[in-house]
Image (cartoon, rainbow, N blue to C red; front, side, top):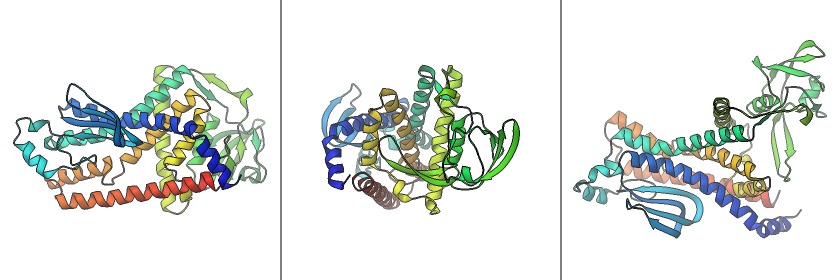
Length: 381
């Protein structure tokens, strides 16, 4: 398919991508900002605005507390604006704060709150994203259940690392690097985190124990929508649907499983970033708004459950990204508060301003790079 046909198809199916994208990102952003909002309210903080999206408001109203709720036309984020903020970045406005200081209600301003309260309000956004993901996964595990496949080799890809190591269909994998395996999905997760390092496998073939060392190789695959991706794999397939067992989990088991799932996503992200910094991952794997929109549209075709799962996964990503110690993000504010706790006074206004500029440049550069990757992957791949 040439670039023109791809562009025509993408634009022609715009609503099919746009509506799921706005829904998925809107829910995730609402969850994130709600964390800031409700913990702020818990500490009696005056909140001027709660916005989903940026730019001119297409809908807005005020609640009984005087907070203006807005929906912006550009659905790429959101913000909670506290009394005394300069703008959506929550940096203080010096002139406004001087006037607020003389106000009898000055204690309700975010910027006059104790350091620990400000830190909790800021941290509440990302951690609400994590909590949301845990609740969603737990709910799905209780309602729909979870499939489990035995750790048995169903097939071996021709020319793969598994074939070179002598693995055969029917082999049961007992341990990977000393870690006991009870589900085929555990093997896949470990390979995603592996990065191409040799792994020691303990297997069983017709009742006879065996040991083998395999070095996963990067294999390029194509998903059901035609998107190409490459990950490190052993080169083995699961034993098939006939061997699967489906189980609905109870509340405690579902909660444990969902926490493990969220932890895996976080671990996988840090592993990927570490390999990216060391030059062992392709920067083209980074995706931006266009990639999320395309994925949302594709996943929406699989049904409501799949779209809800995507919301949970994206919620983890948004929460984790916001904890990075980059000025402008929540992690940057927490970094400032950590410095303030050590120095016993805030950073100077100029230092905060320069930090914000650097953070803004980093975030915009990353977004532009990721968007360029999306354009090349969607329209010219």
